[in-house]
Amino acid sequence: MEWRKRAQGLAELATDPDSRWRTPVARTPRHQLAPRWWERDASGQWALRDGPSDPRAWADAAYADRSLITQVDGLHADKAEPHDHPEGLPESSATQAGLLVRMLCHARVGDGLSLLDLGTGAGGLTAYACHRLGDQHVTSLDVDPYLVSAAGERLAAMGHHPRMVTADATEYVPGAYDRVVCTVALAPGRGLASVIRAVRPGGRIATTLARTSLIVTGWKNEAGEIEGRVERDMAGFMLPRSGDAPRPDLAELFARARESGGEESGTGRYPVVDVADAWELRSMLEVTVPGVELGYETGDRTRTAYLVHPDGSWARASAEWTDPPEVHQAGPQRLWSALERIRNRLNTEGALPLLGAKALITPDGAVHLSRGHWHASLGSPSAEAPR
Image: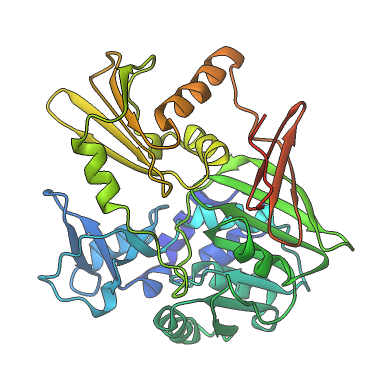
């Protein structure tokens, strides 16, 4: 494949004309990092795509500014058969080049600085960093041994030999770094604390928070805290996969949300929305009620949203198009009511207080956000409700 012209085109899409990251993107054969990937077919199933068997489609996919899903429900595309159709959620990807560049810029990566790429994935960010900084300054870490091994081999074929580490970052991150860029969404609390410890005093981190699209950046002070802000930018990253902290099985609660009449019913104020795609609403909901999981279904004319929480709370809102929804709720918290209060604030004030907020991450991994009279805390046992 003649990839250089394609990579140059991707670099023009993913970077500004004066960006120091333009050359690394233009000189990286991205297709080599994702020879196979998953795409949804016409029926909505995950279907395997094999690059070498269709070089044109491979080039089109690899050099578009998009993410390529490489692992679904534990099955990596490298190990899949053509008849495989995994049914779970995406777990790893070759992340969109433009997003990787934005995260590197948020981290203020510069020459001579040591960098930890937390969340190796297919190895794209590691490749760009090696081009810019030199292999000796770059460490790439992932919890999945196969991802680390495959990315390491593919990077070596390009001439890059960074330090490749397999570790559960929510438990322990070996080493200390001037810059940490997280391409997984970290949960406030113990897991984030482990990562914060790996940032050198005076160093900087750029990460997103679990179940939000908030990019939090900051500098580490002598007290071991990260002082920074929520960037006026958003990104969606997957949750880390930790063998010691499996995702709660909420299937039974989702079934209850679909079938039950609930403890309370009524008519909602606002139309049904797919909360997962409404990034700012989703982020504010997580800040307000941490731990909510989402579901969304559409029919010929109907839209239904589900919210469930590990404490047993659930909500269902269903309506035709933009009509006021019929809402059913149960459990310790009224989840749809919490969402409607957020939407009311957005409509009343024209904005939510998240983007641009001050951020303080304490050594225990708790995240404290504030803007004017508003403040919220995540990940601390004594966290207060947002005000």
